[in-house]
Length: 346
Image 1 (spheres, helix red, strand yellow):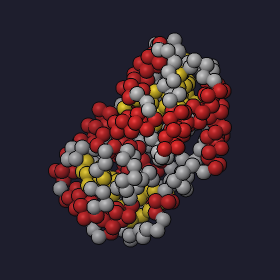
Image 2: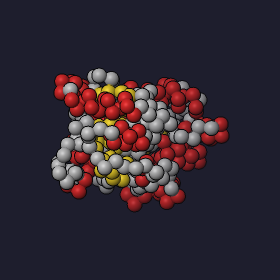
Image 3: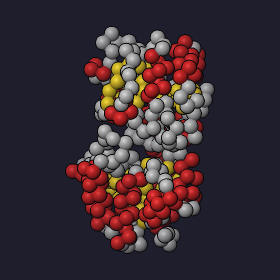
């Protein structure tokens, strides 16, 4: 029986990771959050700041130090995996490391490919949220594709309840919702909705909105708690996610949240999006920066009740098939068995 430590930057003291099997007869699972070393999930910049980097560094050092007590360490995100892998050069003790929620870092030039490849080749397994990420990671870092498992992004059930009135329109009007920060194209969204008899609430990062004029029919906020965002999504008509094309795989958290709440999704047609949204089945896809196409899709979804009901049912069906944590937990349990029975890799 292996001892497994699962780390997630969003876990609080005593909280159990969503990845941990509830009643495994094969292995023991323990969950750990960052405590005082939690990195800020609402950073104002696109890249990790010095303060957050120091916190991640110290947490990575702590994880490396206590890793020797466990057979397998599972960490979240590419940054945490990078830091722990770097420390593992000083000792891995024949233990294994896996990373969940792995998104390929933006730095992909020749030097960064070489440097990151050194560290990521010390990771024994990756869980990615896009089938495209398997090919990209394998090509960038010279890793065999057998080290990767695709599984749709998994999150806890969205927070129930009514949203705080401070975020809503004063007249209680219906609204469309758009939220998230990675590789977003709010300019196209604002241009599309600004010319339509529609209203929207946007939750973004500060840098997403710099230099943009927010239309009068849009209420925009930055960095509000995820729980409040969940509540806003639960009350919206549908969600819209426009991406700028800089990242072929992004927006999974936002899309999955929408589908879990049975909200149809309109979004940019990207490689990574197609793992989640099927045009005409649980959402509608539009081309990059297509203002008129986006406006037409939004108006179509407002006016065509039959289409709306079909897409909402498709969203509900997708969530039922893909957002159940039991399936991922069984994959984690099987992976731990496989990793601890094989010779240590790279």
